[in-house]
Length: 133
Length: 133
Image 1: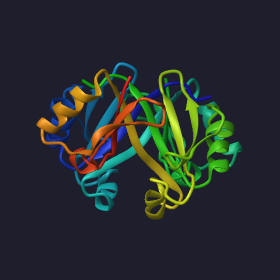
Image 2: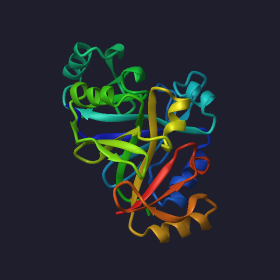
Image 3: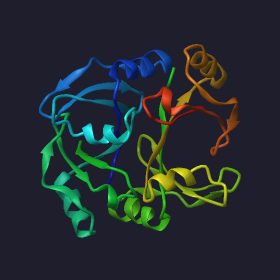
């Protein structure tokens, strides 16, 4: 079912510092910053040849990554996103297999495509996003 | 400097459960289990079309992921590994830029290639592995 690894998301407390780390130190190619107020994040992508790293920084008062940064103040690996062909078929398969999907319906994710998130407790402690490619 | 994302490593407390999650539920293609006693882990790879997920389970009394699982008992995202062309050149660039490399010399990693690990505090809380491709 899962296809490509679309991205790995890393929550960062200091976006300037993260840009230096991934740009200057590791020599990665960085996208421009993008504010996504409806998702509560500012994003920067590190463009790798086979996939992307998404740096996530909280934006606004109700950011979904604020709690993560409370627990891990400097940041850390937040989630992985796999591509699927059909998000509803994926959802049905997962629910039939006993996995918990967060929310009842796919949402439009930060990249304008339908996404679902799966409960970390059902995936060995890892937050998994599925995106319809 | 950094090239492909070689793998994302996920520490798991229950390898049977993780194989069900990534194989049966998510429909990923799994490698056979491999015990690497000299690295203190048993590994299973989830083969994606563009990269790999490495499931890491502790092996023996002195596993490097035992502490991680003490803090996060069900497991979680452990590290990301980027490919570089020249591990020593990468090390020099990083040290010159003020980043801490764990250990003084590259080691031979779990895949038989020279690797270094970078201090999570210098990379926004993320443990970074570099592997000479």
